[in-house]
Length: 287
Ligand SMILES: C[S@@+](CC[C@H](N)C(=O)[O-])C[C@H]1O[C@@H](n2cnc3c(N)ncnc32)[C@H](O)[C@@H]1O
Image (cartoon, rainbow, N blue to C red; front, top):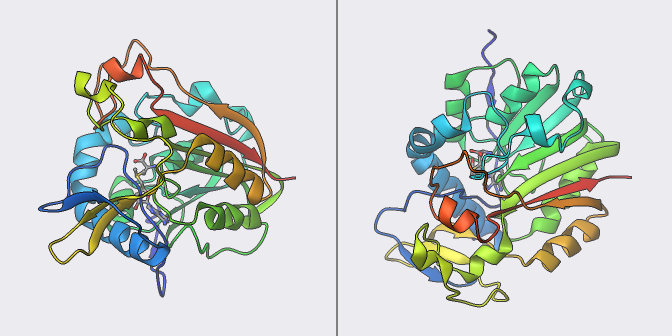
C-alpha cells in the first residue's frame, strides 16, 4: 500500500472539535467569547496533544475503515447520506476534520477518490499509521487549499463545524471547492445538548442552561489562554448558516439511539440517547 504524505500548511487559522473529548489537563472550563484565531490555535493544540488518547478510546468503535456519523453509530452503509454506495465509485470526495481518516478509508474501499483534511498533524499521523492510498492534508477547514470545483462530494463527521467561530466561512469554502450538483453532509453535536450537562447519566437529563446562550465553551489555562473551544449554534442558526453559504438544505437527520449500541461516548449514552437527540446531520446541496 502506498504511504500517503502529510502536507503541512504554511499557517493555520480556524477551529476544532470534540466528540466526547478527554479532559484537558488542569484546564478551567468556562463560557466566554473566543474568536476564530484563538479557537483555531487552541483546538489545533488540543487535538495534537489528545489525538493518541482519542484514538485509543474511540478507535475500536469507529473502526479503521467504517464511516460512522456519530456516537449513535449511524453508519453510512445504511444511511447513504452521500448517495447510494455503488454511485461513489470514481467520485472525488473531501473529508473535513477527518481525524484518523476512517471515513475516507471506507470511501476509498467503495472506489471513491477521497482526500482527508484535518487541522491536527497528530490526528493525521494516526491516519498514516492505519494506512490508505489517498492524500492527507493538514489545513484549516476555513481556508481550504484546493481549487474551485475540485470535488463531487464533501463530508464531515464531527469535524471542524462544531469548533469554528465562523461556520459560514467553512461552509462557503466547502461550497467553493465543490462542483455544481455537489453535496456536503456534516454531523455536529445536536444543539439541544447545550442546554444539558455533558454527563451520560441521570444528571445529564435536567436542563441546566439556556439553549439560546451562544457563548462558546472554553477550557483555559492559568493564564486565561484557551486550550480547547467549542462553539454553540442553535438549530435555526445552523439552517441560516447553510443558507447563507448558498447551499440548499435537503435533509436534517437526527439519528435515534439503536438498541445494539450499549457504549458510552463522553456525554452520549443509551440512557440519554433514548430520550433526546445527540447528533444532528445536515445534508446540503450546491446548485
Ligand atoms: C471529533 S474529531 C472527528 C474526527 C473523525 N471524523 C472522527 O469521527 O473521529 C474532530 C476533528 O476535527 C478536527 N478539526 C477541528 N477543527 C478543525 C478545523 N478548523 N479545520 C480542520 N479540522 C479541524 C480535529 O483536529 C479533529 O480531528
